[in-house]
Image 1 (cartoon, rainbow, N blue to C red):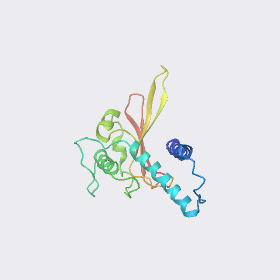
Image 2: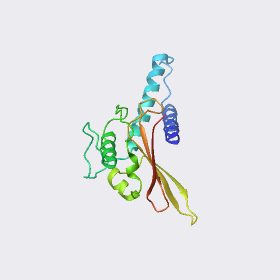
Image 3: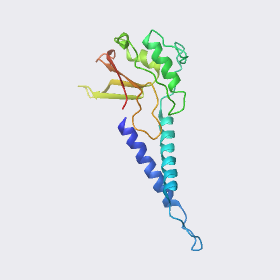
Image 4: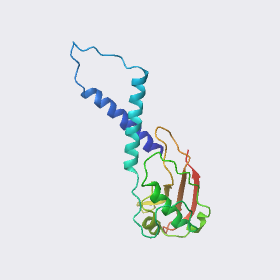
Length: 181
């Protein structure tokens, strides 16, 4: 998550410098004013807005699974369907919108489900971590789903990050959930 955040910051930095390099030199008749605090604040806000727009466009799309509907204000007893509904809602709203979702109460019910079933219902994970197997292939060992949105211009967010840890056969070995920082 931090690599993505730093990547967006670096991208914004490059955009600001590219704009300044491409700008035309002012005529000698034109008097330029130094940028005051409000001007600098506007530039910073524009940079954060651009970074948040890039982050929102890089988010996975909502699942098109018919097994669950979008969150309607009520929790569902089945954690597979409950998380699905909340992910559909979160991925369809604007970045920075408050959700205040808690971690699922009994995520242990997900243990044993195959990765393909999770992907079919929830869609692509927000973050996937892998390891190299003895035969040299890349194996996904953990998927993380963000059940909330980060606030524009703020690192962390306080929304649940649900992580699924897979065994060598591709089934869920364990589940963890904690608030992002």
